[in-house]
Length: 479
Image (cartoon, rainbow, N blue to C red; front, side):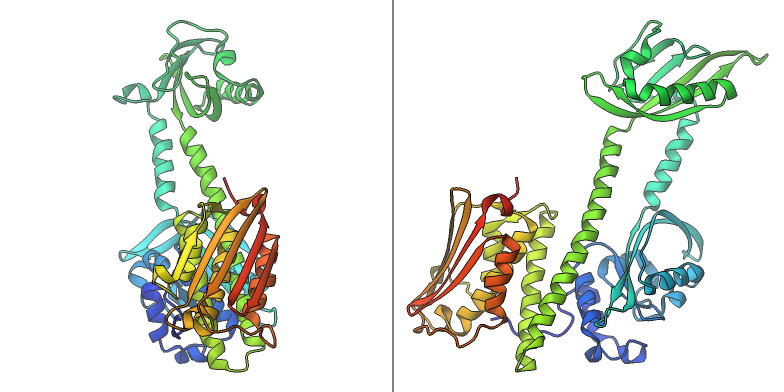
């Protein structure tokens, strides 16, 4: 069984720094006196691969993870334990607003927010995606603010550079893959189109070019932009869908400039269209990832809080309760590691079970896993890992793994539309039913059943503990 570890558990470089830091010198107070809400959110952010910082209390005392330390640069490690308004003095007004809003129980979200930060000895513009949410203490009162910080400077500067390059005549750019086109003065005819790598070429004048290249529902928006450009003789810039050469629908960023004679007569328009199909899909994916991350962070925090409350609420021995809580957090962290590697798109059922039980029993002869592998949902993987951790812990303490010969067999199969999983112990001490069910048993029978939408039953047979799990296949698996 995994032994007691100090808080916080793991967390890389920052985890160690938090353990070593003299928190008594801050408004938070010594590490051992931290409230459970502060411990839980600290443990959660240390396990996250994205930059997260916790601003605790009215002063916004800063606690963060390894990813955030990379963003902080030369300010790290001085930022740890500092007050946010002092640690980021050049944007103290911005952070003052963040603290006031967060401690009032509200959230904030910024996309490509520009801030002037001190870097390399001078103020430099930096762009970031920022998400702020309040963190509640045990009484339900906002006690801090948690921030997810993703720097987008490179992306913003790249987009600006792209827009700048589009203002130049694309005809003079060598070896471009963009579509280069010419239009008559009122855009009623496409004079020529070199479609690059994604549009069909047009080597003759076309009056029906909109029907060929533009989707009908996008024509009004495009015609309005054209009319304004013609009336003002200003460059036209527009993102719109197009029919690509392979028949698929894509997106282009189109820019055209008016060409005039010396007397001001408008001769034609010269333009370039850039294929931004992949970029649009990537941006949409990033938006979904950020939303999913926010959802996962909140779910993980809620699970940690539930484990903490149930572990300590009725614990007769605080030292034992702390050890159990630490072990459960480790099991949760390991399951999260597995899911992070899979980008939270699901996990192998075999891997989720094996990762939970192997720390307790390394001998394959005493722990066998059998069954066709399945990809299960993140929710199922987490619940199954925690349940297997509890069963393994009990087997080490009282069951088949408490002696030198006991064995555990874990098997699963599909029966019709149901997933069936069985834990079976044999060769251990004679089993007697417990006088009362502890949190571990309730976590297995009620918690797991609730998470899977099925039934879970523990059998205290004299020859060894059995646990059967039955859940609807459609509810627990992913494609």
